[in-house]
Amino acid sequence: MTGEPRSATVMATSNVECYRLDKHAFDDIMQSRPEIAEDISEVLARRRAELDAVREDLSEEAKRDRMKHHQVDVLARIKQFFAI
Image (cartoon, rainbow, N blue to C red; front, side, top):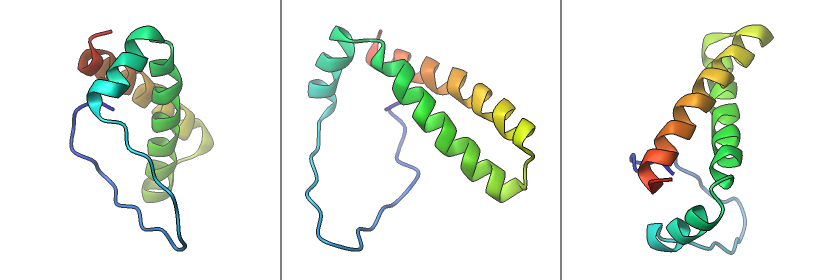
């Protein structure tokens, strides 16, 4: 989403069907609906803050603050990567 290397590995525990969008195809979507960047950045920030909370034993307030910070940062990087 930001042009950076992935930071996680996922392993399926059962059979799954996966779809892949390359940057060009996803770029078309982002250009036509730039508001999607906000939604994506919120999800990514929440996941990151939850991981931080577990790793650092953060309070709920600290977790919320961390999420806000991550969301602003991720949104800016998404917008830069997709030039929106």
